[in-house]
Amino acid sequence: MNRAALSREAALQSPPGAFTRWFGQGRIGLFSLSRETLAHRHALPASRWVSVMGTLVHYTEEGVPEGEPLVLIHGFGASLHTWEGLMPMLRRRYRVVRLDLAPFGLTGPLRDAHGRIMTMDVDVYRAFIDGFLAAVNISCATLIGNSLGGLIAWDLAARRPSLVNRLVLVDAAGFPMKLPIYIDLFRHAMVRWSAPWMLPEWIIRAATRDVYGDASHVPEATFRRYVDFFYAAGSREAVGRMVPKLDFDGLDTERLRGVRVPTLVLWGDRDRWIPPAHAAEFAARIPDVTLRRYAGLGHIPMEEDPPRVAADLLPFLDGAREARPSFSKEFAS
Image (tube, rainbow, N blue to C red; front, top):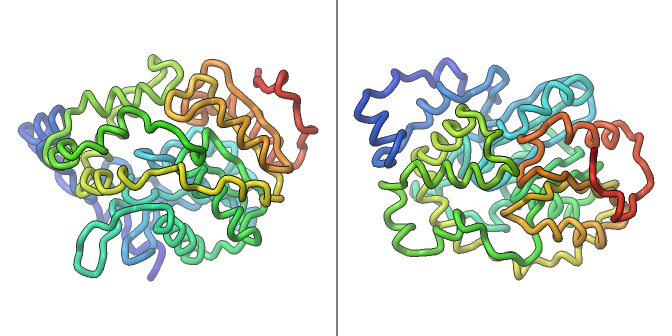
């Protein structure tokens, strides 16, 4: 299938009426938003689609066509837009590929042969990322992953080392932890039952504020994007199926000791979703690692303060890496 099989123009749809704006996507979530409507609002000039596991996966490919590939993998509930602040710097020198993980963003849920929404777990994400890299002809790349995307990235580096050139983990998941309250809600049967047809916008907005170190930094357009994608057709049902399978206790993090590629671990010191102490756990297990912490930033530092993150990321990618810092000198300026 042609990577550009679904174009931005083909996804245009008339804007919804006032009733839908209020009850559907604005306040309560009685109605879901179609992928066509979402593409009209949130597809980018570089947006492409490729078939993976029977689903059209939204991604972008930008930068230098012959440059070193970078693959950027977002976290739970996010989309490829979370990396937007870094793109002007990254696309100057690299072939940068971003994707929307299923069931999020413009990709949406995976479905089985009968059209039923598939339950995402670690094994399904392994098949998904392997299939995506093959579909976009990437045989070796630097992986940059945040949160759930960080878990997918380090797991790939551990199980298929020939595919990974370098590794960047941004507030990555993997060690045992209590789920954030806004995710843990979906462990309750009543929430899973009701969320597909009623999920108040204030919950999504509160979760968005919670991933920033300083909630005053969240632009209204960012709130709107997160709300829209959570109201996407099938997404709430998919999340309800997925969350009960999010069990980090059984992950073999000792495999991190076998990750031999240069690794950069970045962490917001005000991360309320994954304990900042996990940064040191990653650093203690990965042999070739540099660790940087960010005072005042939260779970998605690359979205909250892109220049600050770029100050560490770009030298690492360019190969001007410093010796491993002591833990007393981890804080970035």
